[in-house]
Length: 183
Picture 1 (cartoon, helix red, strand yellow):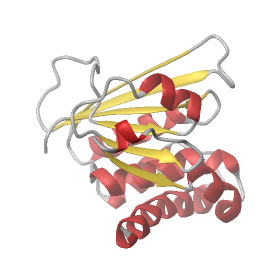
Picture 2 (cartoon, helix red, strand yellow; picture 1 turned 180 degrees about the vertical axis):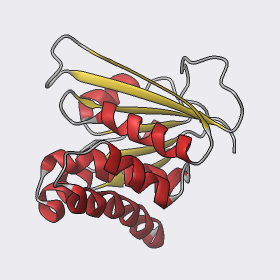
Picture 3 (cartoon, one colour; picture 1 turned 45 degrees about the vertical axis):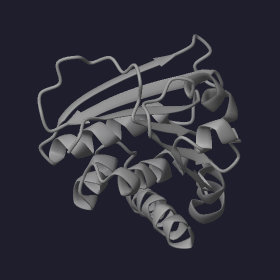
């Protein structure tokens, strides 16, 4: 596996930090080397948020991401701010409410998915968007086995919400599968 440098972005309160923690743990459970970090403004809820995870088969000596190989954006403002410096050919997943300029979509594989709307319509909870996103990212990049992904999700969610969150992570994978079938 080539080194993957993941950047998750959104608004504070969308769970992007938890998303990168889950991705890192799932990859770790499959024996990969991982590093996770985050940053957000003093606004916390509603302000821009960025969290990152590096996944590699080899030891990770440098833990800062300068040009991500993958970008997830759940809000337009976060996409506009954090999409400026991407690795050549980086993969991008955005919520389908996010507009991606043609200059970016010509250089990168972009999957626009109804992440937030699916959280509302299918799961019944908007806060499930980050778990749906984790399922989508893992399906797109194959960073961890489905078993490890589900185990990592279950380790970080409130008791009593297991079935709902497993449904969400599986829905994220299905969104990517369905989109790729129609392309």
